[in-house]
Image (cartoon, rainbow, N blue to C red; front, side, top):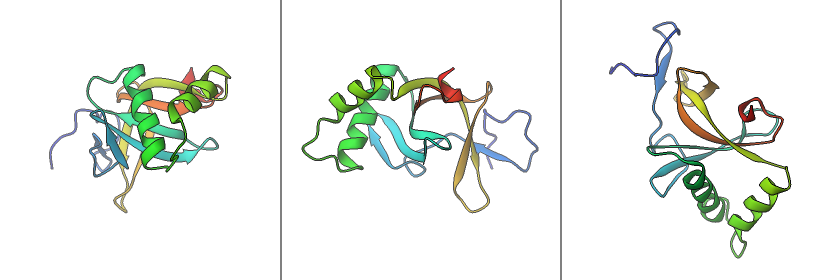
Length: 129
């Protein structure tokens, strides 16, 4: 097994990884997007990939909403903009560590030794700070 560059203070039995399309729900504009557990847990969406910027993350989130979430005929970009401007959501780019679970799934943690990921969260969420 290859050594993951994001591994730090976890025991060697903890497998960390860099997400690929196989781990996520969709790819838009070269970024990978996945839904999370909802505002009660991690957030709504997470975006990872090379050259991650706020603008690219928002574009990938909107494309994900239109295609994967089936917001057909709906302006997902305007909805995201309105909800962000209205204070319902914020997009936070924060260091995130992805951990492979025993069942093949994954979990994530905000950690300084992680990789950049964009989270769509409520303004009160810890990732927004």
